Image (cartoon, rainbow, N blue to C red; front, top):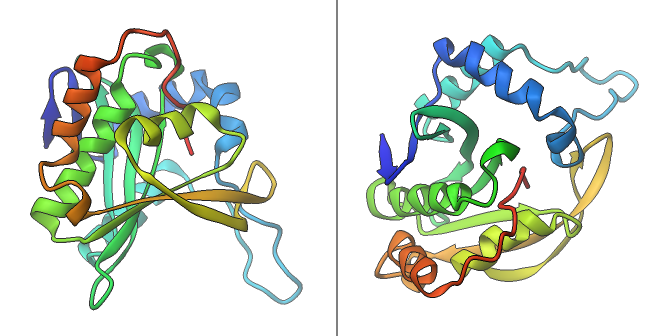
Length: 208
């Protein structure tokens, strides 16, 4: 478990199903424009379908046991409010991964998502031993872009038609950090930025 104030990251569990479904259902319209979808099958290709919650958790656990993923839920004031996954973990000469997330609209604007991302990045760099973390975001997703901008991620460029989102292949901007860029830790940088930043009422982010 990783924690900072009212924000907690912990591994996703099968028993989270009821709370996870309730938050996801309430936020359907909020999440849909940024949610990954499965492209139509190609002729002769494998059939694909959206997994059930139990199938999703079992897949995430399997990937975690293989060292390729870190699947978390986000809690705020003791309540499940979202999900954050460090996926695509690659070892060897790369030692990198990428972060994806979504959060309940009801807690947007309270610093929940930047705090959760900072917790995850520090864990990846200091405990797991990764060297580089990416976040890929649709150019249109202004709230999600503000999360990485608040945290000081470096923008690296555009990946055309990178992921299947909301029913089509979408371009994504790449943001990244390496361990050398934040020797003090990302959470320390975020604490400092929050102390210096005046409240502006901007929402955090539904997803990326």
